[in-house]
Length: 186
Ligand SMILES: [Ca+2]
Image 1 (cartoon, protein in one colour):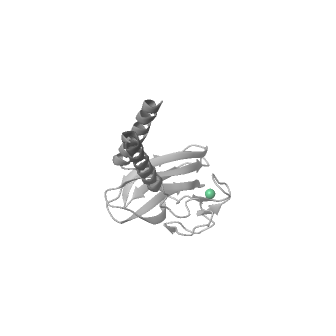
Image 2 (tube, protein in one colour; image 1 turned 90 degrees about the vertical axis):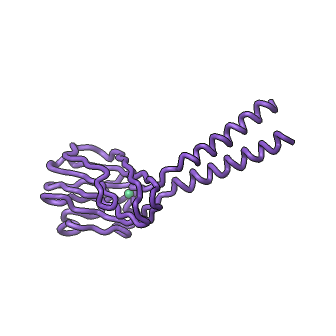
Image 3 (cartoon, rainbow, N blue to C red; image 1 turned 135 degrees about the horizontal axis):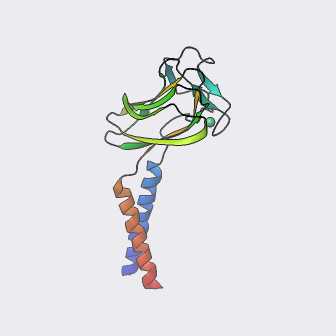
């Protein structure tokens, strides 16, 4: 009986922990793969769609990716996401560079630079990650791009909440209790 109770508690903690982790891993960004063109995104500082920015078919996922490069300075691709104040978020995306210099990529959250990379040499889609901690319930995420002669490409952008340490503790507790129970029974 004692072990059955423990088993139940362990399963419950494991389920809660798993649910918490699954929930925390939800991508809160919309159309981060650009398969719906520029839906849900806004731009600022570019000259003309199809000239210095747009959605093209050199992609990391699906058949579309964003390409862009402000001329002489950064131009921006923006999306606002619903966030919880104090929560830390992982930002993940894939960056392609045609190697034309000068170029630059910045990631900003609410105007604060979270990532800054200059003169990216020729590279196929390469994963880039950064984080930010939300200070508002709506966070403006900005990708600043410069490429005077060509364009940088972005695809597969995701923003996910970093699981609270408590979620892992709960999962560890559940797994530990299950392991203990199996050892006692076995
Ligand atoms: Ca895509």
